[in-house]
Length: 443
Image (cartoon, rainbow, N blue to C red; front, side, top):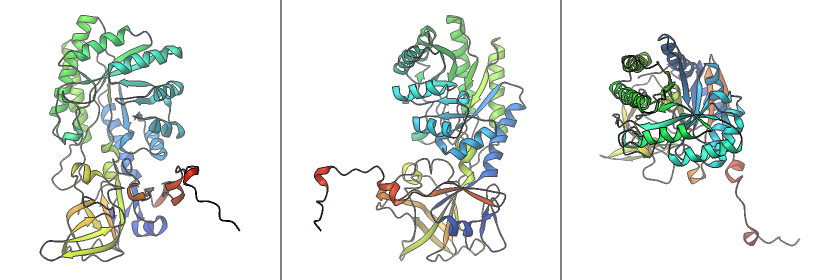
């Protein structure tokens, strides 16, 4: 059994996270329940900040809030000295409501609406990451209306394809994101950005994918971005004070996953930056990165209650829990794999092979296909590990199932940071037109 962060098995045979017995958490907050190991989140953030600090280079570590965006997480990110990436008005609003400093917010996205741009300008965010020519013109026009000059990075695709799932590879040429370096589009974007009077071009942004376990892709991306930066200086006389290498740093989900230490990723990136830019006598840029999954992924655990089971002799045994693809769509989307334990009987021998099914009305609602557990009983608690990234963020109300609560556990204290949705929340935005209303019953 592989336990992350502060997780341990206590003398009752129960899983403990952040000093909190999860059996007690289930009684207090119900299930399904997202449990976040706050100490591990902070530890991961500090690993990035410290690794960059030791290089002596200027840097920003921006938490990619798309991985898990709630106000409490924004507060933790600020306290740990991070900047923040957002990709929608909802994420921006969450950050602002949490009191996150607007000047440390970066706005991403391939289709920012005029309303989102207006909102970000009004808030005074630190930087827009521009994804296409339409946005370049739109951002300049709206900034002009408000009499503002705004910082921008241009997102470029360097032609580097990371070893990851097709759906989460974003640095290759055929991508919905960014300006392509190889076909000259990125160069034209720089020309246009420099010509826009309301835009201050800080540099370029590159993101090659997610769940990456090696450094060669990052080195190659730096080489491509550095060569492009040098070309821009030679032909246009402009230098980039910022280079953003994105995120994509992998975590351990299951046995066989082998993420590198944070310091190894950081050293590879910074060494490549120093080598490439120094060789060209180019001023060393400030380096930005955007970890998301690697900050919160292995710090999250989802706790379920086992309900029914179905044993098909010679085929498999299904065990159903009170959640599923509504709180974790990743197995259905990506074929993602997870490890799990019976949280209330964690010390018992593993004698049964089961498949963990969700409760949604979908055959594909499967969380784990093959999992060894003690003999499972209705009412047992199943803890699925490494659900901190893209689980709550992607949760839905399919089948009108209410989204779970979220708690932060630290030093024996569990704090509710997202309340479980109520039935009133589910129908809160529903409207019945007058023609469909039931007639009043005469008394």
